[in-house]
Each structure stands twice: as structure tokens, then as C-alpha cells.
Length: 172
Image 1 (cartoon, rainbow, N blue to C red):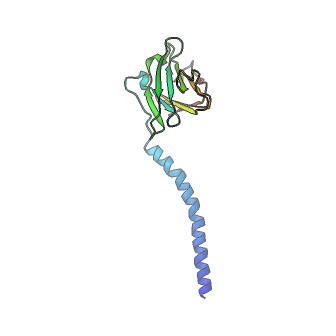
Image 2: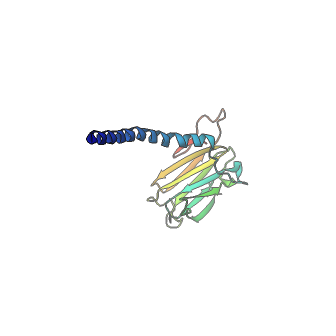
Image 3: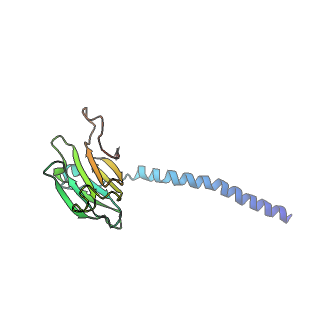
């Protein structure tokens, strides 16, 4: 009798684990979704920046990069920056020079210093996220040395296509 009882207890334990594992997997999927719905994530905003826009730069720890705001001859450049080692990124309020008259954002992030790597250091994986007016554009440049964000927010009649030279756009 004790042999049957031990087999019954073992089978019940295995059956319990087999049934609990799918429930655990479903809980790991649905709990974050429900929490995200109940407590939505708020994108970063920069007071004083046009449209409260924020540029988040992602780069490996200790790698230097620079940001070029705008396109053409009168561009402003932030030099010698590094990401926050605890976060893995650094946020910047978008400067007015980055936006042209038609509302397009022109921002370029280069890896490395300007003197040694004028076109960007190729072996540094860069990433950038542009938060504008409740939308965001995410750009992963891989190992190209530079990210060129050319983007126009909004979806008016003249803007059915979002334009970025890398990455994709998403609504927040």
C-alpha cells in the first residue's frame, strides 16, 4: 500500500507542476500588459524645447559621441558626450536648430570625437529615440558610426509617410 501511496503523491506533484507552469507563463505575459494598461508609461518631456521634444542617445559605456543639431552650414554640435553608466543612455532636450521651417527634425549622432572620426567611429553600436508630441521614433544604427534622424511628427494630410533614414516610428 505504501508503494501506491508514494506513486500517487509523486504523480500528483508532477501533474501539479505541469499545470502550474503554463499558468506561470500566462501570468508573465498578462500581468505586465494589465499594469501597462492601468498605469501607462509617460514619455520624457523637456520644458523649453520645441514641442517638449527629447532625444535619448544609447551607446556603450565609456564610448564618446557627439550630436549635430540641424543640417547644413549653421549646425550646432554637442561634443564629447558619454552615456550615463547606470542607465545606458542620456537624454537631451532637442534644440531649436534641429527643426527646419517645414517642421522636419534633422539630428545626427556620431560615434567618436570629431578630430579622429569625422564621419563616426564605425565599430560603436549607436541607438537613438526621439520623443515628440506623444510619438516616438526609434533608430538603431548598428555599426555605421552615425545615425541620421530626419523625421516629421504628426499625421496630417501631407504626412501619410513617416521618414527616417534608419529605424522605424511608433506611437507612444
